[in-house]
Length: 488
Image (cartoon, rainbow, N blue to C red; front, side, top):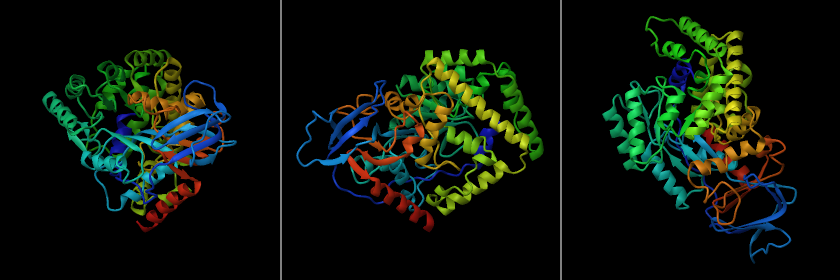
């Protein structure tokens, strides 16, 4: 992602809302038997037909052929005939608080996550104090919702790209920030685009010392290769990746770092952006893409492309705009106003040639993902919801489709939202596949996602930490979100 794009987004993105769940059943988890279903367990095993999966409380109790799996007395039976069962999904790049929690915001996002089968999220930038409260409410059963892992505020240069941020401008400040966040209980350290090398490498060293991984953007002053060598655990939005595939990487990097002059007009800024993007695209090197991919594999550097953000915001074109989308009914009025302002700014004063260039950038981003995937780089699904034009919950299914378009198989895309996040979180023994003893997070589909990944959207029911949400319950959640949006 170019500096121009980072600056545009940082100027335009609103403070992402904080939220939890609209009211829903508080009944205790029960014993549930999904019978005669085809199980797609998100391993490399072939799907198994006519199976029964039993959950008891918050765990999967049994998985086996329907002909030989005994159903406990009193179990709630869900007929899975002709249907497909997958593990609960994960959105590994989302924002649950942004700069804080506006009044009533609990009714916005988490209902949409549950309705879309999302059982785990990695919050990539928010207020620790609120995230802890929200996580405890969910873990204690006070609210239904996905399990939450989070980074807390960003570590960034001055001025920071987003809020909430901790500005770190030297090694001492960087180390102190890592120590503070570690004490506060974050799961990861999030680095941002404006970090300078001294601070960035201090973050890397202190994170390693304290045994906490650091993730996020590749800073503008650092190469993707250098970030991987420094131990960055995941790279978001493909930051630095296309530049790392360029035969003119260092020249383009130096041009990117030139600050915008206060005297520069908008037209001049746009002209610089067009020329920089053209040179980036023209200098793409397939061999450099392979070399970078092999380095990422060696260093076990994960990728979270967040295609919904890139397609529907970063490289927005008229046909990928969300104006008139029916799902806007779930977005509160104040948020829609910010979305409208953002999309207008990204589309105004752009020419057909600009839009063609953005389409080309998406194609090259997908090509880079294909090269990385073919080389064995590990991927996770993520969305950056609720950035403008990125619908919470729904956008995860879009990301899976984009990953397939970029060259992953449907199974690999599904794994990017199930077993791969579990591996990254060091929780493969707890979640990510359908096996006895694992968390009871399951999604029942009306159609086969391995035939068409878009079938992950055809949700019949969701089991979230042992609690069953049938289609009517999911529709009720959507209706509550719609009612809240209409009133706010």
